[in-house]
Length: 503
Image (tube, rainbow, N blue to C red; front, side):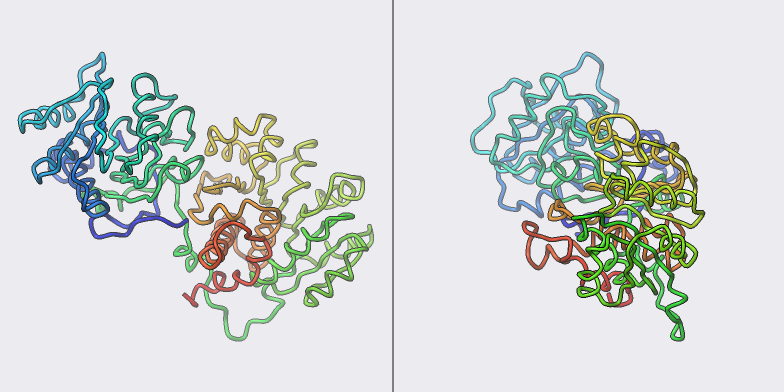
């Protein structure tokens, strides 16, 4: 994913992700470990946000600061006070609440007033000459759609031509899931504090977050000692899984991979999956497919071993293979169902995708040596719910997939999630909108299958495969943009990422 900050005024993005609830409970402990107060942390947050605003918009002379009735609003008061002291004109609009402000936010509000600042009510008319909007309306504790007057302020900010910097998370976006149940601030920049939250990286996050920055507020040492709940994986993570090959290694050591699919009219899917497996380093790749695809596959990629799918060839190939990939172009007819029934009885490690998943939804079964790679629609069929249910809480959905089907689940989409039956979870923070085109999932299946053949564990192969897939797409997008990206465009880019020593 592009657009993440590594500027000097903030920390580079962490590879550890924690829930917003965990961060709220841990904040007092973390502050106490440094001998500082929660108000000190709020001051640090405001200072980091002010520095970001000055760096990104140095010519801005009139800022609109929107403050909610909570600690997110407290951060906004700190930013306003710092900016006003530097000579920036500040218009501050605040929402009132029925309960008292938290102590730290109340102190920040009072400091703003003591410095001569004014507070305008939520229904105030906005000035016309705004250069920048600071969003301090709703923080990470939100779990429903914003209500009045917050929704109206969010919609007004989105109508404005002024850029928005969101404090911690764009108001209206849910920190736990990345869902957007109502109005959400569309930020140009988001500065999140202390730790990354999952809702900044998956779900609908990319539509709203803009460029993501992180400031740990001086808690880096303390955070480093805490076990991460979720891992954020990027191209920088690849060397932990993919080491340079031993100079005397041979093809037999790099895995014998069997791919089954490509019913009548669907030869492209199995062809892309098979080449992706080769490009990812699989030693030997064998394809069983419809007879009409044999010639085209061998012409396009003579390194493949291609045969007609039959009962005899399937049994022979299963005896030969180390790993099986089934689903690309499989179809849901008798041809595909018969093959899947045989493969289902095999104890070989496997990856199931596409129509293999649709058939699995009809006859659910759990196994521990399988990777499943559904997109949200397939996940909905597997879990007997709607696609909207999946997208409303992707983290819960991927956990349910593992609980119901075992092994490793990859829930595809912006901010792909990977989870296993031991409780491990990762977010693949790579990829772009150009991947919204046919065949991308087939390429991913081939990459993961190829890595499984090279003896990576199911979970590591899934994580590494998702990163290679998304990073290859990012490389293509950097060269030609996102519109018009083809799944086959990724194939020649794969070796650059499965050989991370090249970087």
